[in-house]
Image 1 (cartoon, rainbow, N blue to C red):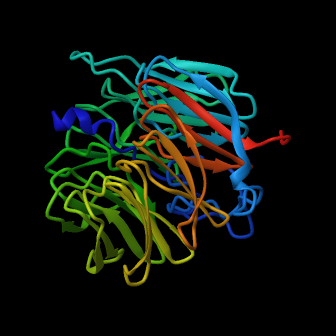
Image 2: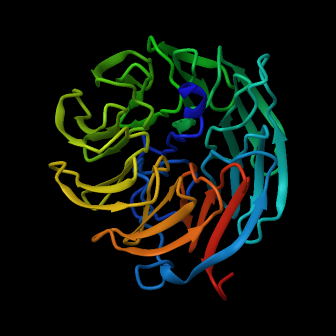
Length: 387
């Protein structure tokens, strides 16, 4: 069934923030604490170790094998990698060695839907993650001890966004939730009228943006949950929005990538992506990077004009990560790629033996990504001779 196979197609995310998604001025924190990182664009401007000149020398630093596929995308904070697995566990691994620090089992629902396919978010010493057992969990980041659990009405494969003491997350029960980050108490919920499967919230300037499986993109007041606007595409939206410079960028299963005005939802441009766009966009230096079908695309953030495309050997459901002039992305052709952000030229690739649905995270000179069925686990790639 397409719905079940869709589980392996995309991982989405939310966003941690100090001031509604914006990084404090003058600070550069080289973590990747949530799927979209703190600027909601899957761009790490703090990464200076890996460059277009040395990324071709990346090699496997370590791998950690789990008991199920890793669709979750890693979060890196304070020297620890946090990632979920379809074996039902959330793992905390030493970022330098891959050694297990702790794991927490989230469980299954009554239909034996197991797995932590949601991508974790780390904020203020707490790890937040959704689970297929219909719960959102808050765990102590150092010990893995459960702090609280919130029960939703269906699978929680959407990934949390944490902003101003609030956890925002979607569920297949049709709702977007706002939960008190300290207690798990529900502050508000908004019913979208359709499943919120993999699309995950982005929070910017007091607004929560998220997609739904009926093709709607919503903008909600982050404090009250009131709907500000809705844009309807012609097919489902499982992609997660990226927000930059007053524009919301998001892909759709109708084969398009959209740029919507953040304040009104008006369409600024749409660009054909050559197939269903499950991948979530990354935005850096006025360029939008996104995967669709067999290609990775670079589009002008202002006009949507195609700048370049790179063809992989199979579908690209992984979402690109951008750091220091390099685009990192996985493919179902069993490879992870590093591409020149300006030209699309391949700088490096690694054969993973199986599908890569997980989306890379890049921090402190290391690329982290999850593996598929045969190679269940997490990979870390770095430069030889560097700790």
